Amino acid sequence: MANFSALFTIIEEKNCPLYRRGECLQLSEKTIACPGGSEVCLILVRDMTQILFEMLGNSEGPDGDLPLPVYNCSGCTGLIKFQLSSEDSDEETAVDAEFEIDPAKQSLLNQVSDIELFQHFSEEELVDVLQFFEEIEFTSDETLVKKGEINSNIYIVMAGELVVEDDGLPLAVLERGELCGEMSCLGPDISVSSVYARQNTKLLAIAGDVFSQVLGEFAFVQKYMTLLLAKRLRKTSEARERELESCMSGRLGQIAPAELMQVFHMHKKTGVLIFDLPSGEGTISFRNGEIVLAEFDTLSDRNAVFALLAEKKGTYRFTFGLSSEAMEIPEIGDFMGILMEGVQRIDEEDEEV
Image (cartoon, rainbow, N blue to C red):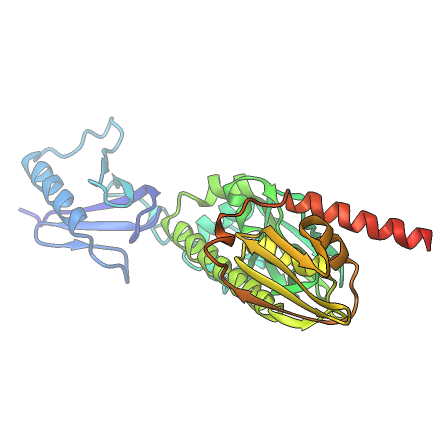
């Protein structure tokens, strides 16, 4: 009796951590050979052992007039379907078969081959994925994303550099292989920062919802995006903390009182902002970013805030914490409403002068 041997081709793959569509599995009476360089999946070994028993029990083999049988693995984090290959199947149908790629696609493949996001795709998968991307270019200082506007795209830097900033504060510099607009994979949203090209820059662009549908089924892409989002959030938080620390003390000539108050409001800080001014000391007490007390000269609360907004010379410092009494005092009003009214008063006074 001849030794038993069967060749299977993977015809469908979804999130499998080990194997890819088009790869081959060789089954004999004693061994299972997986695609070159791949680890052996114990779940697949169990499934293939069951198939072996079934095939050994069927001495006649598959009916030549019927389609070759297709099998599923039991599944783990992913799933594969594999089909028995006929004995006379041409080597061109095997796993490592070459497929035609037009020169333009091959050029793009070569350009993205070292980019981390694309490194775990097979060549055939990558060709399929790249058709959803568009190549675009931006000149130096050209704005890609504006703060406050809706962005629905994800961008990958192919060449050049992008700068992410928030109101003039640089948060990050993105270089080749890095992503921008990654939050859009969760759906279109208002941009919390601006992005512009530091130099002539070439990008790959894809709609966030398309990215989620096409690439989201790959486990390694999900892991990459999760790690990227966590890293970006950490860097942004660190940059904002540095901004806050730089505002703990300084001179009013370097920052306007209105901007200073907005910093502590935005960061929801609790403490006392103390102004040392030529005309005396002024204080504004914040609780979770809202004003609960304000004193300057003979003025208090809203009027004290209005007067402090007009000051241009002096120093300031911020001390954390409030007394137990101050923690119970109601807010003096809506922060933005008070700020806007104060700025408007200053503008009107300047016009009268």
